[in-house]
Length: 255
Image 1 (cartoon, one colour):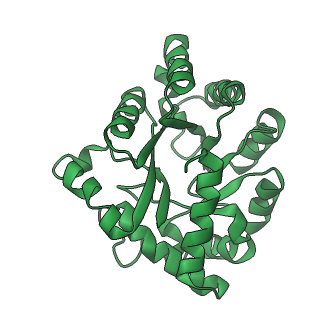
Image 2 (tube, rainbow, N blue to C red):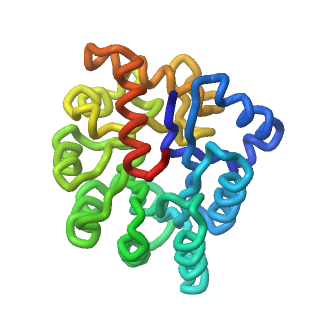
């Protein structure tokens, strides 16, 4: 069954049918989902979803676009929640975003490092957001993230850099973008990175794969991502789903 390593079912786009959709996932070959926090309220909502559905787990962390609202008090909440709640399996999504540059870059870096330190102390993996910040993200992970496992979420850089992340022990998160006709870097990464270092994700409700591009994404559509990766690699879709699910279960410690 499919393991969606990065979803946002707390998003308001799911308000009309969230429960019906999630309760249908098993019948759609989706066995596990990690709902990832990106805001303060999103972290709380992710934990609530993980407590409501036995196949959903939570990641708690603050996205670089939102770190202006991050405080020591809330960082302490993240720490205590992740320490005491077994439904929390990762810290994220954390990282750098130089595309929007919503927050000053030095502030983004500061909170990225702080949240990596927290993950190390908790012995939890991290979910990394990186946009238009390739070298700074890599340098900070190499310096401050040594020994912390994790996923480079929605990977968008070169296959060469992906290989460097693999050397550091990270998984490469691939989603709907790999199905886009012009997604040369994502396709090259899928071709060159061994399946043992790839995990599947949606980032739903965003980034739906072809033929649903531009529509609301959901975990069952990972099937299209798996099929694309299988075609690129010349293996079966079942092999892609099986190996990437095994990778995710090992990373998150999920049975």
